[in-house]
Amino acid sequence: MNCIVRLRQSLDVALETRSLRLLTDALAGLAEAFTGLPDFKAAVPGETRMAEVLTEAAERLGDNFPYFHPLYAGQMLKPPHPVARAAYALAMWVNPNNHALDGGRASSAMEKDAVAEIAAMFGWENHLGHLTSGGTMANLEALWVAGQLHPGKKILASEQSHYTHERISGVLKLPFEKAPVDGVGRMNVQALEALIARGDVGCVVATLGTTGVGAIDPLPEILALRAKYGFRVHVDSAYGGYFTLAGNLAPQGRAAFDRIGEVDSIVIDPHKHGLQPYGCGCVLFRDPAAGALYRHDSPYTYFSSKELHLGEISLECSRAGASAVALWATQRLLPLVRGGEFAAGLEASRRAALEMARRLEADPRFVVPFPPELDIVVWAPRAGSEMSQRIFDQAALLNLHLALIQLPVSFFGGRLETEEEFVLCLRSVLMKPEHEHWLDAIFERLDRIL
Image (cartoon, rainbow, N blue to C red; front, side):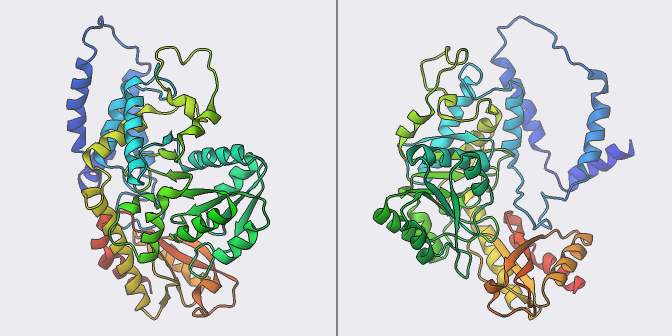
């Protein structure tokens, strides 16, 4: 009983529960759609022990960092919007499968609508796209298409790109190479051209922005190289893509996002800044003709309709229709437009990152290698790696949760008191709009540690 009381107190303090009442009302409305069916009693194995098991599950889930709280300023973990949680749960009473219309008729239509709105955010009306289980699968599909169109040719990504690009290339049996980055973590254009000039590159992956430091690769310059050498350009914006809506980007970042509609494919993760539960990624192709590469026959799933089944343009088979319902509901509530309520949340996160970097730069104990381009702040104590680890460990004891990342010392321009080639740095992803108002609490804890 005590654990139940503690759970209720925790919910009152930190976890939003008002949407549960809205979910109950929505479930009643969903039930009305099926009132013409004969009554039956669903078999629920273990029904009498459900409360016991759920209580135990709640206790086990307590062994997590408080990802939902502003004092969690570590990895890319953003709470889903309450409407996304409720819509996902609502869909689970039907449990649709968006592989084929036979298994997810309504949720497939909602997926097409939601994906079309994401594509429109990048200026694409005619496109091919669908949701995936996450950014890794979405990037795999984009690079698979690149490999089909340029068989045997190399995939190039920056040294700061996500590690999955190299893994994916290995799975696809495509050669892979990393391009050097400049002093702020962006792909080095001169080094990139030297690699491309050899004539064996089929696709360049431009990252907007990188998951390590939030760097935005110089897309306008990469597109200029494409015009000269003729390769595909894929944008991995799994983390940063929604920032195209933000009105407070620096000029270099704004210039990159303004050209994103010219690339061949885009990946974005709604389960990062899109306020969705895991896992929800999205892959988009500018040319709908890419769908011909997916063509296949299924002996049993494509007979209920002559309309396009999402499974016909996807490498994945079964996919959660609930993800599409949650995304559709969120975008219905918060449209993906500049100047809107959704965009305001992104702008608040970026303001928080800029202010945090400013305060750290003004503190002689810390060094910030470069200003944040989105909402990731990276910094290091002047004393180097050992002090970073100490701060990380001590901060957690004060319920301030940071992250660690290893970066080249060259990023810091000789301002660190270390002879290491790579230095362990502190890193914060300020994904929550509330972070803007919690910086005083964060710095108060850092001061106590030091």
